[in-house]
Length: 496
Image (tube, rainbow, N blue to C red):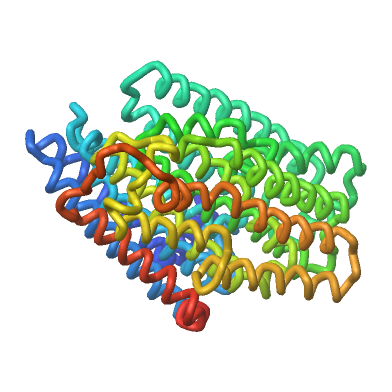
C-alpha cells in the first residue's frame, strides 16, 4: 500500500493544480444542481430556475474573461485540457450564446406553455455549457470525445423537448440516430490513432510524428473517421444531412442555439488539432490538408446552392449554416495561430447575425404564424422596423458593407490570399474563388426576404406586430452590434 502513496499524492496534486482553471465549470455545476433542487422544491418554479440559470451563466462568463489574464501555459489535469487565452475567450463567447438562449426561451410562448415548462430545458442547457467549455480547451482525444458526447446527448434532448407532431418527432429521431452513428465511427477512428501512437494527447509532437508514420491509407481512413464526430457538430458536408430537418422541426430557440454554440466548440477543437501541427516540427500532412480543403469547398457550394431552393425560413438558415461552416474550416487552414483573431471575429459575427435572424423569425411565427418566406409579403409596409432590421441581418449574412459580416469575410479572404502568396498552393486559390462565388450566390436567397417584404404587391390586409417585447429589443441590440462591429471592427479585435 505504501508503494502507491506517492502515486496517489501525485494524482491529487495534479487535480489540485488544475482546479483554479475549472472555476467556470464549477460555477455551472453548482448552478445545475440548484436548478434541479429548485424544480423539486417548488411547484411553480420556472422564473426562479431561469434566474438561477441566468446568474450562473453570467458568473461563469465573467470568470472565463478573468482567466484570459492568467492562462495556463501547459496542459493540466494530466494533459487533458489546456485552458489558455484562446480557450478562455471562447468560453466567454459560449456563455454569451447561452445567455441569449435564456432570453430567447423566456419569451418563447410554446416553450413557456409546455407541460414541463422550461426548467428541464435550462438544466440541459447548463450541462451542454459545461461540455462546450471543456471542448474548447480539450487537447486529449478522450476528453474531446467525452465533451462531444456531452453536447450531443444534451442536444438530442433539446430537439425532442417540444415534439408536438410526427414531423418534429421524426426530426429528433433522425438527429439521435445520425449522431449515434457518427459517435461510433469517431470512436473507431480514435482507436486507430491510439493503436499506432500509444497516446491520445493530440498536441504532443510525438503523437503527431507517430501519425505521420502510419500507412497513408490507414491514416486517411482514421482521419476521416475522427472528422466524422467533429463534422457532425459542425454540420459540414457530408455530415450535414440532419441539419435541415432538425432546424425546421425543433423549437426556434433550440434551432438558434444548435446553429451557433456547438460550432464554437467543434471548430476550436478542430483548430487546436491543426494548430498542433504548425507548432511542432512535423508539418500538417498534405492528405489531411486537402481533405479539409475539399470539405470547406463542398460545404460552401452545397450550402449556398441548395439554400436557393428553400422556401421555409429555418431550412434556408440550415443550409446557410452549412455554407458558413465552410468558411470556418477555411480560416483554420490558413494558419491556426495567427488566424485565431479572424476565427474569433467570424464566430462573434456569426452568433450575432444568426441569433438576431432567429429571434425575429420566431417573433413573426408567434405573432402571425409565418414560417414560409413567401408569407412575408407586404410585411415591410406594415412592420417596416422589424423587416428593416431583418433585412440588415441578411445583408450582413451575405457579407456586404457596412456590416460585421463584410469585415468577417474580408478578413477571411485576406488570410487565404496571404496563404496563397506564401506557398502558391492551388488549393488556396480554389478556396478563395469558391468563397467569392458563394458570396455572390448568397445574394439570391438572403435577399428573397426583403424582396417579399418590401417589393411584392399583395392584396392581404396589413398585419401589425403589436407591442414590442423584450425579444425584439434584444434583436435590435444585436442589429446595432452588427453595425458597430462592421464600422468599428477594432472594438472587437482589440479584445484579443
